[in-house]
Structure formats: structure tokens, C-alpha cells
Length: 191
Ligand SMILES: [Zn+2]
Image (cartoon, rainbow, N blue to C red; front, side, top):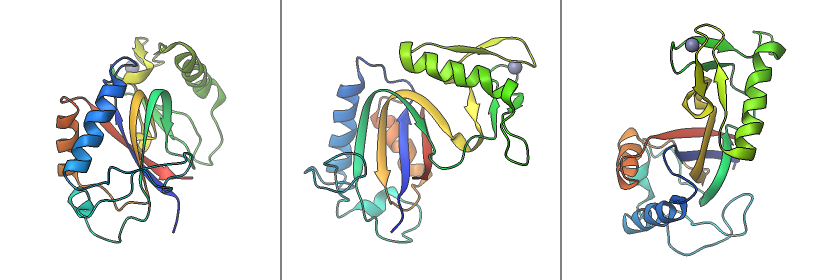
């Protein structure tokens, strides 16, 4: 067993409505039989999570293996990230320029990375931060930048599943619908 995770992050949830949306998402997952309602010791970083339900396979693309661990729901302002590794580049929301953050050798490009690192700290503290693109000179809200391999997501609600096979696109779109048609992103990785 590894410690692989997939987190469905709701990009439109606010600090005010995240708890309600968390409950709605969980209710749906339980009704569908994808997770169980009761909490057990099945997630990293929290005493209790929701273990896989009998119909867990409805959520995944290929039933490569049976999920061993459960669901932890995160609410509150959170920098979601892919764990090991990092995003090699960020993508400007205006001009789609790729801003390289690391060299091919894996060294940080300090003057490129610095504004992003600062913006992440500011967003974590205040919930608002923007970065000016070096290519088009326009400022883009940190939450609207895209990332290599969807490595980062900035939001108030995440459904973090531990050690599940890869989710299917159909499941992800049904779940986004349950969340009111919100924009969601899947952040996955290992710890
Ligand atoms: Zn740009």
C-alpha cells in the first residue's frame, strides 16, 4: 500500500458555503454507495475518514485494485498541492504563457518562482493574491493560474481520497454537478 491521494478541489466554494457543500457532497457519495457514512481510521492526517462503500467502483475508471483507504474532507482556506515533486511551470490565465519555475535539471528558477511563492503566502494569509505575468504584463488572480499537472489548487473545499484507483471523468463531472456545477480540479500525488 502506498500513500497516494486524489483530491477533488472545488474552486468556486467560499469560506461561507464550504461546510454546506462538504455535507452535500458527502451525502451524495454515501447515497451512491461510493463511501460509507461512518468515520473510521482510514486516512492520513486525521483521526477519522469515510471508508470506501460497496459501490466504490462507480467512481473509478479502471478497477485496478480495491481502494484501501478513505475520504477526508478539507474545509477552510487551503493550498492544495500534489505532495512529492512540484509544478515545473505555471500558465497565465490571460495569454496562456508557460512560466517556467524549474530548470530541466530541477533547479528552482529563483526570479520566476519568487512572485508565486510570495503570492501563495499572501493568499494563505488573506485569501487574495495576484501575479503579474512576465509575458503579457497583466495581473491574474493566483486562483486563476493553471499549473503543470494540476499540481496546485487554491480553495476552501477539497475531497481528499487516499489510495483509490484513478477517478473516471464521468464521476468527476457528476460530482461537480452535485456541487452546483462548480469548477473543480483534481489534484493528485503522493506523500
Ligand atoms: Zn500572460
